[in-house]
Every structure is written in structure tokens, then in C-alpha cells.
Length: 113
Image (cartoon, rainbow, N blue to C red):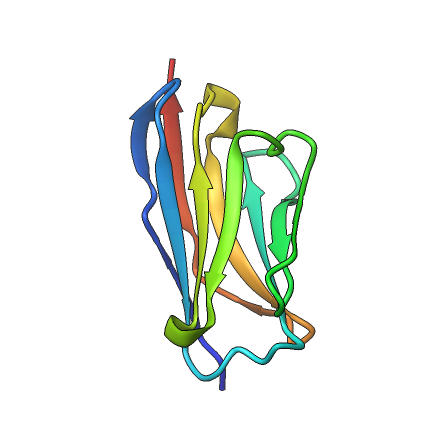
């Protein structure tokens, strides 16, 4: 059974940076896509970024230019570098493995103004 564990969240001031990590137990296949989602109170979860097994990234519009997704297959880890954070980035961030649809427990990111 695959498990995903996120870490790296925290409290940061607007304009600051955080790097989230998602460690996947077991082997990440090159067929797997790893996605970062986020969910704010009262809102539906939304995709933040995704990365294919070969390392091709894709970003939601709000993340382009500020966030960078990367993966280290040797460490079974996917990272989300978030720069120039804004208060509306405050959310619980989750990683998800496609196509198995496994989820982590999430990590809280809070950006103060």
C-alpha cells in the first residue's frame, strides 16, 4: 500500500517562501503523476501543480511564476517550492498520486499579511 507524507508547512509572512515535501512510500513509477492540491476553509480543493514521471511540470494559473514543482525519484519525494506567498495561499496542501488516487494527510500553510 502506498503512503504519502507531506511536510514543510508553517506560518510565514506575505512575500516569504516555503518548501513542501511529499515522501511516497514504495516506488514511484514513471507512469505516476504526482499532484499538489490545496484546500482553504469553505472552498473546494484545487490543483496547485503536477509533475509527470519524466519530470514535466504543470501549474495552475495562480501558481505560475511563484511555485516550482520537482521530484527526486531516487528519494521518492516530490517538492513544491513556494515563493512570494500571499495570504490567499493559506490552505492545507495535499499531495496526490495518480492514477492510484492515494492522498497524504496534508500540511498547513498559513500566510500572514
